[in-house]
Every structure is written in C-alpha cells, then in structure tokens.
Image (cartoon, rainbow, N blue to C red):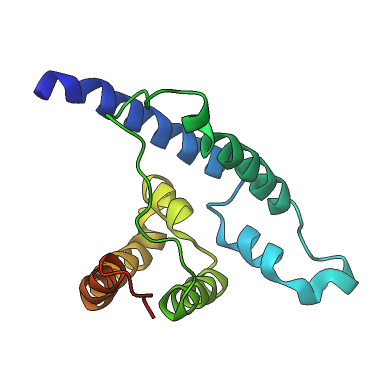
Length: 159
C-alpha cells in the first residue's frame, strides 16, 4: 500500500508546485494586484487592473475540461474512482460562507491558494492570515458539518 502512495504524492507535489508557480507568475500572490483588480471605483480613473480576468478565464477552461474527464476516462489516473460531491444545493450557509470569503479576500487581498503559495515567498506577510484561515475553516466545519450532513443524508435540504 505504501508503495502505491508514491505516485500519488509525486503527482500531488508536482501539480501543487505547478499551481503555485502559476499563481506567482500571474502575480496573484501580490495583495496589491488583487486589490487593484477588486477596486472597481478606479475604472473611471484608469487604475483598475483587469488582468486577473485572464487568470480566471484560463482557470475556467481548465476546470471545464477537468470536470468532464469522467466522460472520457474510465477511472482517474491517481484514484480508484471519481468522487461525486454528496451535496450540490445552494443554501444560506453556502451564501454566507461565500460572502465571508469575498469579504476576507477583498480586505486582505489574499485568497487561500495564493496565501499558501506566499508561505514560500514571504511567510512573515501571510503566516497570520493562513493561521486564521485554517482556524476559521476548522471552526466552521466543527460547527456546521455534522448537522448539514445528517440533514442531506436523510433527504432534507440543508439550510
């Protein structure tokens, strides 16, 4: 079993490194770049930076094909089977969590992927953010996960 993990770990390390390099290359690890993108009030003055739309567009193309891989492949390259999310609904916790995520992204100029990539570039600038992000994720899951999963598994909508 241990030997089977080596390709999975290697593929994970390679894809994570490639993702981090892509974030750094696109300057998504720079909070000023993010804030310049989110500052729509700068549009009339020519200070708005729309370049991250290209990053999001490229990510959307990759996700489009990646999410359809199960139609071409019989099984994933690095897993026994494709995973299917057990919950697909839009509910209040999802909307509230999305709003909190967006608020944190706008205020800090960091989102999780770039913040983790920044740990390798400038850890002193992001270690507090990453710690708070992990603690918030853990606490949020501790509070909401058991009740939401029980409701969904029973066939009731999760609120």
